[in-house]
Image 1 (cartoon, rainbow, N blue to C red):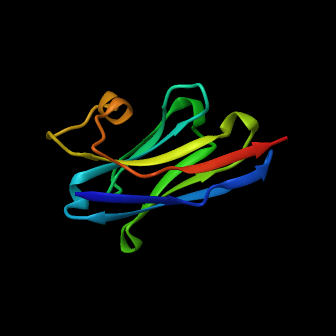
Image 2 (tube, rainbow, N blue to C red):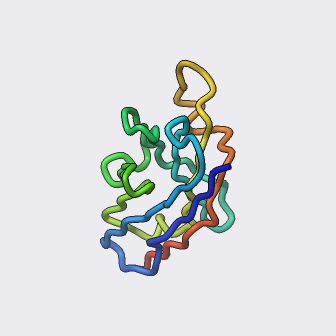
Image 3 (cartoon, rainbow, N blue to C red):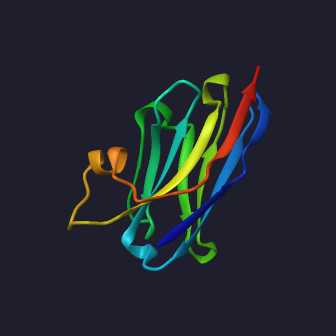
Length: 129
């Protein structure tokens, strides 16, 4: 079992930056890939970025590359999502997720689609103009 708790969301102005945090607990975190997703009202859940807990591989969605960055601090059991140049289009609930590594390699589709077995409760990000 893996438990995930997100924090760092809030209400900000356009152009601002936020760093979201996801504190993970449980066994065998080294055998998991961590991901960030978001879901805006009336829209489907959107993949943002993923990183192996070990930190040796990461992948970011083309739509947010260069503006959103995922990272992991294993000593703090925390995965981060740094978000810069926020706009109203970034308003959503942001979720942290964990996926078990199932084979010798993982495809981009695996990272973007999953399945991710564990999910946090979400943290709200609201951006106003």
